[in-house]
Image (cartoon, rainbow, N blue to C red; front, side, top):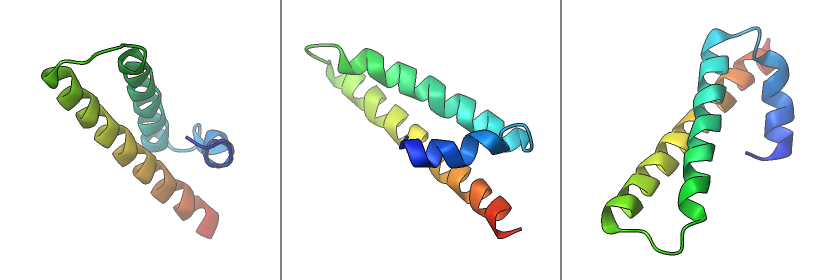
Length: 74
């Protein structure tokens, strides 16, 4: 996640439980992906799993940005 996006989201975490949950899940997906990125070779199954995690991570980021935008509009 880009620093400016994170700067926008972190102050809102205690205000919104859904945002906090999405942020925590996004961080966990990031950790899982870093495990794949440090490997020299991935099996077909591992590549599929990595792509699945990338999609989930992106979906969480989109949801976080949507929630943050609602707060910005208030």
